[in-house]
Amino acid sequence: MQNNAIELISPAGDWTCLRTALQAGADAVYFGAEGYNMRASSRSFTPEELPEVAKACSEHGAKSYLALNTLIYDNEIAGMHETVIAAKAAGIDAVICWDMAVIEACREHAMPFHLSTQASVSNYAAVKHYAALGAAMIVLARELTIEQIKSITDAIKRDDLPVKIECFVHGAMCVAVSGRCFMSQDLFGRSANRGECLQPCRRKYRVTDTDEKFEFDLGEDYVMSPKDLCAIEFIDELVEAGITGFKIEGRNRSPEYVQLATASYRRAIDACMSEENSPEGRLRYRKTAETLKEELARVYNRGFSGGFYFGQPFEAWAKRYGSLGTEKKTYIGIVEKYWPKAGVAEILIHARGLQSGETLSIQGPESGLVRFDDARFYCSEAPAEQAGKCDRVTIKCDRVRKGDKVYVIE
Image 1 (cartoon, one colour):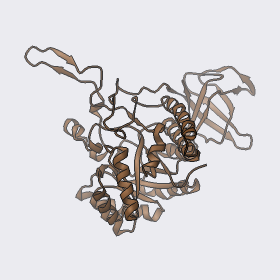
Image 2 (cartoon, one colour; image 1 turned 60 degrees about the vertical axis):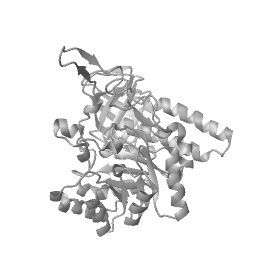
Image 3 (cartoon, helix red, strand yellow; image 1 turned 180 degrees about the vertical axis):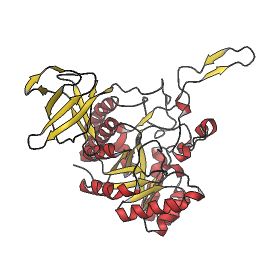
Image 4 (cartoon, one colour; image 1 turned 45 degrees about the vertical axis):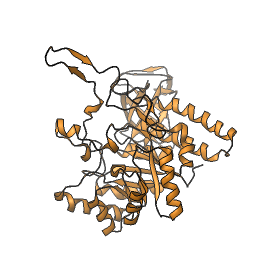
């Protein structure tokens, strides 16, 4: 049972992830527009696709938020206005932004807007300023503690300010204040503030003595690469702090990540809101959250941290490059046919082969993500234990589509 007072806001870098987020229980989905969002390497969506995006979200009872949260240059103003107008016409619920040019465009075209964390709102005076401009929701700076957030939300209630507070609860964290970093721009000419960051901070570095040429590794930590935020074990405290929008980072991450993160936080929020406010109820929620955190470790992550919610993060740095996730997916083929009345899909195997009982993931822009944890399949209408390259197998499953990609999850 979803709680309408709390919004779970999930990322979508493409159609597959958008439909996956909706299927997993997101209350809202945020996504980028081509050229104007902080995840330029994600596929993003064109203005022409926005009506279909809004429709898909509405059909699931979810809201649609379009991220226009990069810096905007003068030669882009006209195009940005066209995108805001297209979002308004399509029925998109809000634009996420922080550049004043975008804010003014939203005001001009009567388009609701939310303030991005890029604005680094860290105090109530700033909240009042942006609320006066019309911001319906403000994503606070990631560097705030729970106590600082509660001070802001208490002031909002006291003054009856018509604005909601949103915070990140899961996903990548940046070494720079609210992500405003210039390292990628300086090294490669690819600006983080334009959504083009190449993440040089995530790499391992070595110090060289220029006189003697001795080299030293910078310890065992990746000293500019923070662990990922994971707040699933203290959702109850964030609710008590007055936060009503819980955002999952990850528009560049996989459908598996979007599905598991969304479903896990859906369960955690619902468990938190359904338990009575008692020591026993809180203990039941914490046990649920502890199990969910273990599940979240399966997909892409750099290790987990509580961020700044309880002050300066403890052991905040990643221990190696890339993901610590325990699952790996391998492409094996595509769906060639689907018979909806029978609920059966035919899969053509392109690579690797398939063993009975393996975990399968079928993904596509219309289907989202369909997962089988103990896949049983047929060859020539008979149960089979294995299949190889160029074989065709059939499997009973929820609706998928021709052309959907099939992966084995290990």
